[in-house]
Image (cartoon, rainbow, N blue to C red; front, side, top):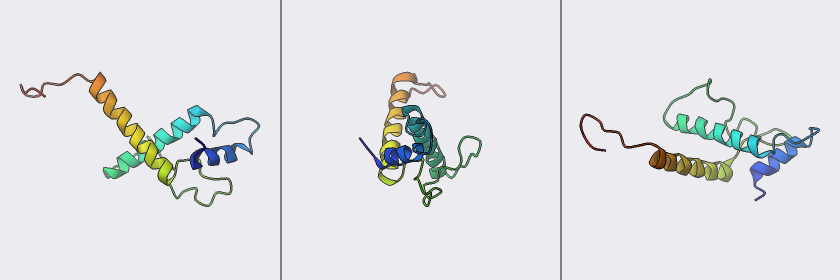
Amino acid sequence: MDTLYLQHAKALDRERSEPYWSTPYELFARAAEQFVYYALANKGVRSDYLVQGVEEDRYANHPLGNPYPQAADRERFRAAFTALIDDCRTRLMPPVEVCGMEP
């Protein structure tokens, strides 16, 4: 699927001798980075140690495009990462007994 996110990544790669921005690893890493940023922001938390510089409007006027997902692409990644994390919690984390109560 040639999303706006991928189109921008390919445009950014035009200035390079070999692809970087449009490689699957980099696409995934930047989408995950942005997911963490907005997940923290939604809780009123900021961590420049974990992530910074991924705000949707930060690269709005960059001549080659935005290296991070925007709008609909960002929302699709948010939904996918949320589902992945929820699935991992369900499958990989055993129930924890708290204060003698069953979960």
